[in-house]
Length: 628
Image 1 (cartoon, helix red, strand yellow):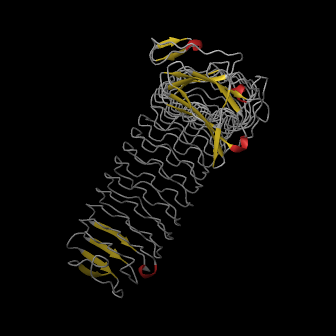
Image 2 (cartoon, helix red, strand yellow; image 1 turned 120 degrees about the vertical axis):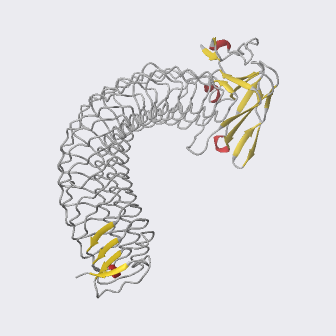
Image 3 (cartoon, helix red, strand yellow; image 1 turned 45 degrees about the vertical axis):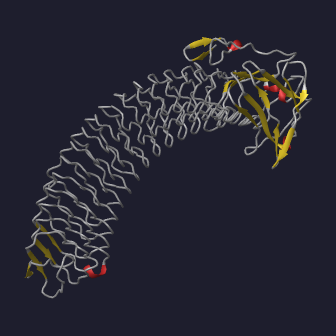
């Protein structure tokens, strides 16, 4: 049974677009493949590589057969056009005797259907043998066969048997058949690599998928099968394989099936790499997820599985205990109706295992994260954009890994109190952007590490606009790393003071834009390091618009470190006091460092140091004083 519009029809007598004009399927002595006009002025042709050496014949009455002539150009055969002028006209097509062809991923035969709507029927086996004897599909055999036949409304039977030499045999077969409403039965129970990959991709009128009874799987076997089938509502009740073999098994299978409300049961307990990757991505009508009972995971197995399923009401429990790389990455990202986290039984983490798992969901309480041994990227973005999240999980790990907390609470605008962060061993990007945009955050955690890592605190509290005071924060490290504090409090527009910064050994970009655009900053600490580094203070206090008294800066070698003071106080329009212990100067390394400051002020320097007048030295109108 199939639907056309809101009317249900029997597939043996599919109706035309006008339900007052029923079609009677044509008959012949065998179940040959045929095409039948649904309406008027249908044209039928076929294009195939010349190497296929196809020998075909056709009949427009089911009994009288004629050679289907062809012309050859650029190594392809094009069969002469057959006109089906009237509603109900049909043509049978079969092999003159036996055809056997060897297809490749880059050469295929394609039906050329023009004009009005057309239905297909009979069995495609007739293109191989006019006797309709049992035939085994070969690799890529019907790949792209009806590709872009936008007027095709129904599919023929696929009566071939399968073997290990049948890989990718039906891939892209109905790709972009935007009028297809009736899919063929697919009864095989043993499946091979890529057989159904992209088979119905972008069949935008298809509402009912065929049953898929195969109990085995293979690489890419169902990948993208119904991708973009925006009308698809009815899918198999189960995908019965319990052990998934081959990679990418179901990847993108139902992506953007925006009408799909119910998912098939997924009984598999042992998964493979990428098996459910993006499987239901963009299924905006899906409310109930399938039970996920797998206890043995694989790399990327659930990654993006329910991405942007905006009506999904809850997340299924996840019973596996050993994580694999990227296993839950973006799994529920964009599922804005999910308000509670599932039960997760993981005991051992892996790279990116929870990365962006709940990004932009509606959860208000976090997943418990009791792990003391972390993995690279393990929590990166896990709660990214969770605007209703009010509390943070306990984070007991003392030794961190690369990107472990990267963007963990990014944009969590309801989070008020951060978790305790006891780690003393840091890693590259470990805290980078961790609380970026947490505009309700009113305090910062203690950061006890003495040994830093490159980019470790970069952007950590950027745009935390409710932060007022961080003077009690102890940043006890004395040796900096590249970009370690860069952008740390960027645009914290209510911040009034800074923590103490005792570092004496600087690094490239270590304080770059640390307090940029902190427009209420009035109390800053001194900067005790005597030896500067390239870009070390670049734009550190730029746009701190009410800051009046700058820090005492003990750096000496301004002439030798590239842009070390570049725009350091640029736009600090009330700044009127600066003390510098520089023993050398370079206007290029202090380029516009005091541009836009107060028109008058006090500048303290060593008597032996020559500093030119201007925004890259001593502002015009300022009084120069000698440091003793």
